[in-house]
Length: 126
Image (cartoon, rainbow, N blue to C red):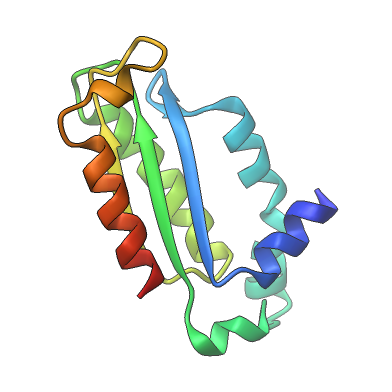
């Protein structure tokens, strides 16, 4: 985690991507977020400024892919990600979610995913 902590501290842009499993982020993504409780403690309990880059603004992008048709899974995952972004001082983020993508590699055939991802990446750089 020390490498991940340092990457989070030094980044101006954070992209969080996860498949949706049972209406939530993947276990690997969630455990990383859970380990970032240390940032929450620094920010809210110790009242420390997390990063020098906070002065320049930080942005995030959340990318979610799931096999279900219901938005419920993405809404649940987004709630967790929103809390994570807030805790690491990313005040604004965009969310891209793609549903009914169940087979390996199927995202490539999605009619809008690649273009939407490209455009979101461009906005993230601004």
